[in-house]
Structure formats: structure tokens, C-alpha cells
Image 1 (cartoon, rainbow over the protein chains, first blue to last red):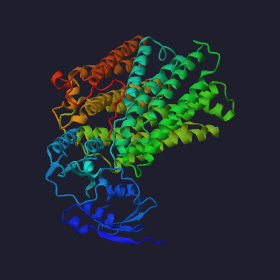
Image 2 (cartoon, chains in turn brown, red):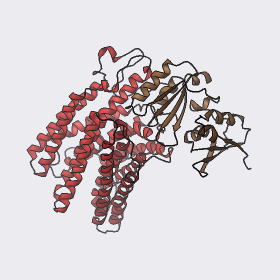
Image 3 (cartoon, each protein chain N blue to C red):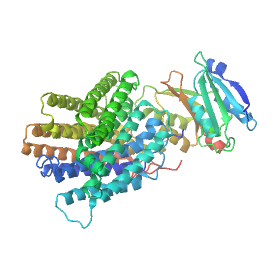
Image 4 (tube, helix red, strand yellow):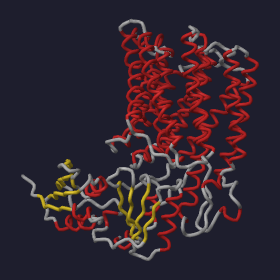
Length: 175
Length: 451
């Protein structure tokens, strides 16, 4: 059986400085059973591969010239039935614009973690915090999960800056 | 990715490891084993394995259960295995140490202890390899530091296999001629695969990430780092695979040793260049004690390589192989291990205790859990004592060696006491120590809070 693919081109959103996660998840939610997703992006969307992997999609990523990437997400047998493992995957709606931006790239560990957790305590339900880091915040993520915040993050195209978006209390709401 | 949780039993590994180090230093102070006894004597073998397995390997395993997941940003494959693994390793080490006593005639046992040690240590390290191997396998493609760890784990497998062959032959379980050959000629490969491959190469990989992290330096991942990985791997492959081939075909082992030596020195030189670059390009001008002491240990590694080369060129290497092994174990690996332990214990304790209340109430900083000026004196004493002891070995002054070992023991007790204070939050001002919602950490295990 050949898989049909729905096209989602997030390059204009990315070039405009936007955050296409909501757009992609909305498209995934609309996919009829058995249909795949063909994603066009300006970089290899590594974190997304894991998110969709947890929803049962396998992927094939290739560079298509000009630094752009095409990723084919093919639904596996478990697609649509796999329980969402990460806080990210529970949240399919588009996220509002961040109300706070932090640049934590020049801070000694664990100061970035401290500042992010402190900031989320002052924010209202549903508000989004955006933070830049110089590495994947491995120890932060379980703390966010414990506190019921949803997040998604990944390396920027430069490969050095990790950007994380945190939606306060969103995982609690979805649960 | 769901992030990385605290490894529940890492503190137990650390505590057991430090006890083994103290015991080994005590034996050296008491004049048991090398240099009072010949390097191959049962008492020396007991001492060497107490250090290599009891101290260095348990330290490395405990650290990897916590930090291999950090290196690859994936959770540990199985969080329940580290405890039974530790049990097997401790039982296996005890059996091995008793087996050496049996070999030396100190104790009499009605059955062979070597086969028991082979089974227990084989199973324990097998579980280490399975758990870490599955963790790394799930995270392919691996970042560069994790690839060093993969090579280190392959060397651990080789070291353990050699050890099992030695134990089975010594224990009289097998008299198969090729295994007897391996047991007779394979000692240099066992030592290099263990100290050079498993312990040093893994420490090198982990150091790329930890030093960059603690000094806010860009992590090197260019040609020199890949070069260090490839040359180092080629050196280890030359000695392990080439060495086994030489033994099996009854050719001289020396060509494999030479090839590995040349490749290894190129690899270490590239690593040295990377590390110098890392210290120079750091954004953090004033660095913490752990990074400064790691620097001393790294300088010791460079000095050990230089001394080894000098002895080789002077044709005196074989006479002084004990000094080189001592320097690798204590000046480099133990120095680096203690330096990183000082930071890791503080960080893990801080995260366990204050993580749940961060942002909700005032909490201490990680640095508030330690008192660097106090620890600094013990680290200084430790390194000076190691240099004195190494000089004593080089110039054959056994009384001076025991003096050095005594000072090493005192310094390790001092550092161990500081680690204990950190774990018990004793350095934190009482008003800040336990804010509402924070739980005091247990000494030997970390509570993993439900997420």
C-alpha cells in the first residue's frame, strides 16, 4: 500500500521568525488514518522527529537543497493510538506568543534551570515562556513535567543555541 | 525526550568506591603489596584490583549511570538494574580479593575462589554493559563525547574477558592451550585495556562535556576531537585485537605495543590540545575548585606520558612500569575522579533536595553546599603526596613511598569528609538548609520523586 502524504510547508512561518509547532500538530490531528505527513522546513526538525515518533510515526528526512529539509512521516501500526509520553505531545493546540523571553546562554549551570523555574512560578496559567540555552536542559525537563508545564524545544539552525518554549500549567490542563 | 532523572543508586557506588580507595591507601601505608612485594605478587594483585575495580570502576559506573543519559539526552535504559549490579560487583570484588589471598596462601578455602569471582564480576560488568549499551544504542546517532564512552565500554568488555580467562586458568578450571597462552602473555593487554581504554578513554569522553559545562566553554567537536577519538580507538584496537592475534599466532607482541603507543600518543596530544583550547576559550574567568583540580590531574596525565616516553627512550621502561601504572591510577584517574566527585556530589545533592522548591522559595546555590577553601587544602595535600610517592617509586625509597601513601590516605579522608558534609547539607547556613517542601537527602541513595 502506498502512503498518501499531506503537505505541510512551515518554511514561511520559520522565515518570518515564527514557531510552527502548533501548525504541525494541528495538521497531524487532521490526518485521516493511514495518511502520512510531508513536512518542509528550513532545518532538520530533530525534536519533532521524537514527538511524532512517540505518536507512532516513522520518518525519513533528507536535505532538498538550499539548506531546506523534507521529512516524510509515515504512520506505523500504532499511529494515533500511542500514548503521549512527553508533555509536548499532549498539547495539540497552537500556543500563544511568549510573554517572557530569557537569554540564559551565558549563565553557569544550574543557574539557567533556577531562573526558568523561578520565572514559571510567577506566570499565569497558559502563558508561554521562551528561553535560550547553550545546551539541552536534561535536568530541567523532569522538573517541568513534575510541575505540570508543557514544553517543547530544540536546537536552532546554528546547532549551538537550544530554544525551549514552556507553557505554564498546560500539561495539567491537558491531563 | 523526557529529560534525565536522578540516578537512584549513584551515591552508593560513590560511597563504596571511596571506601575501596581508603582501604587501598591503607594497604599501601601498611607496606602491603607493591613496591614492598614484587609487582606480580598476590598481595600486589590484590591492591591493584582493589583500586581498579573497587575504586575506579565503581566510581566510573556510578558516574555513567547518572551522566551517560545526560551525554545523550535520553533516560537510562533500566533504573532498577544498578542496585543488583552493585551487589554483584561488590561480591565479585570480594571473591577476587579472597582469591588472591588464597593464591598467596594467606587463607585456605575448600573451593576455588577465582571461578566464583569470574562469574560474579562477569555478571556485574555484563549488566553495566547491557544497561549503558542499551541507553546509548537508543540514542544513535551519538554525540562525540558519547562515542568515547562507547569505545571505553568495549574496552571494559575486553578487560573483563581477559580477567575471566586469567581467573579460569589460575583457578584451574581450564587448561585449554590458547587460553593458557592468553593468561601467560595477555597481562599487558588486560592492564592497557582497563586503565587506558575503559577508565582513561571514558574519562576523556566525559571530560569534554563536563569541563565545557562547568567552565562555560564551547564544546570542542571539530577535527581535533574526532582525531583524538579515531587515533585513540585505533591505538586501543591495535593493542587489544593486535595483541590477541599476536598471542594466538605466537608472534611477538611488541609490534602491537609500539603501534598502539604511537597512535595513542597522537590521540592524547590531540586531546591535550582540545583541553588547553577549552580552558583558554572558557567564558567563566574564575573557575571552581573542581575544574582547577581536574586541570592538575590533566597536567599529571601529560607528565606521565612524557615520563613514559623518556623511560622508553632510555631503555628503562620495563624497570619502572610500576611508577607509570601508579601515576595513571593516582595522579591522573584518581585526581580527576576526586575533583569531579567534589562537584557531582554537590550538584546531585542540591538538585535532589532543592529541585522541587526552586522558584517557590529561597534556596541555597550549589556552591553553598561546599566550602572550597577547606577542600582545597586536602586536594593540594593529595597531589603533593602522589608526586612524593611516585618519586619514591622511581628512586626506590620504600619508606618514602609509605610516607606518601599515608599523606594520600589523610588527604582522601579529608576530601571524603568534605563530601559527607556536602551530602548532609552541613555547609549550608541553617536558616536556608531545609526550606518548606525540601527533604534532607539520604546518604546512600537519591529519592526519585514521582513526576
